[in-house]
Figure 1: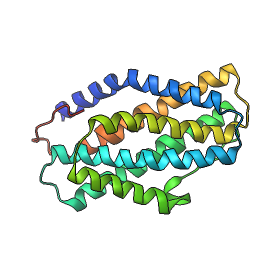
Figure 2: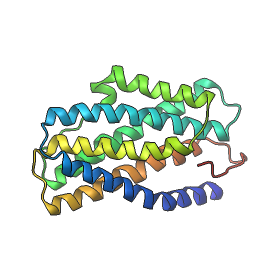
Figure 3: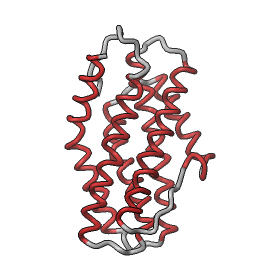
Figure 4: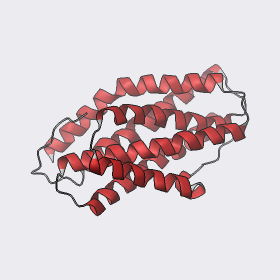
Length: 206
């Protein structure tokens, strides 16, 4: 358990700078797209959110598979699906929704696996299948962080309605960082490690 906690702390610390860069790209997107219609923002959200779910499931399942090399597919599927859907919803919808309320936008939580269940749920399963046969985490985790940031940004843009002052932009950056940093590291690293046997060899794979 001590080894797991050490790895979790190290991962959160190491991912903070890249997450800050990702949050900055999300803020830039919000600035350039601040005047688009909410319906367009919602359409873009439902492009980036399923893409995020695919990579989230891929990395979560891959991390688990790398540590538990003989895990059955159904076990990998459950870990990958729950990790991806639960954490991606928290990252892309719940935390941005809370940010929208606190900042003073017009909040509405878009829960992808319910609203667009026919897109988001298959996306999670696809990610698990890819990870089961090709458990790689380096590129997918980096892309996962960016896609999560952009999904969160467009979720907030749905509620923005053109009201994007400098103080609100600063608050948006903070919520974009939080929406990605903790959930993505939990999904990709901490969540799969919870199911790994303490005797398993734990390495830094990505």
